[in-house]
Image (cartoon, rainbow, N blue to C red):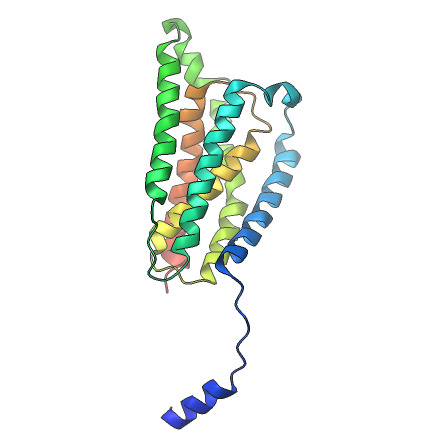
Length: 212
């Protein structure tokens, strides 16, 4: 194409205003959360004792922990969605949040009688917890990756992994409306396992879907 032709093409192009990065990501996050919530109520149902669970110290601690993970990962996506911008303090924040729950879970386990330690970390739903969280994270992860694909991330693996953390922690918080477990040790093992699967899947998909 000749220079004059290129100039004429650019001059005639009507540029559409771009939706801000945060708005695009938040829209898709909300959409994924709604689908995730519908799946929870359809497939699992609400904990019938949710009114009592909502004021339980373990539940409150878990929700604060998951909120921290969501906050740090969303902050990271706001940055990584822009070309050439790093993750900032995202990884430190996520790491510290995980370390906090691991520490609380280990402390609780050490304070438990040896005969009850297995029940403390396995609970009564270890067979389905991690898989359920990963499954519920899929619509959230898909929505986030779709939004990120419209943007310009330059670190596809890391961006996909952080999207997986956000999707996994959001799915875990929604799954908490069904879960009857109250052991911090259980959360440190099986909730983290479910979120780790979502993170790995996000990184894997990011290598293909988010590469320029």
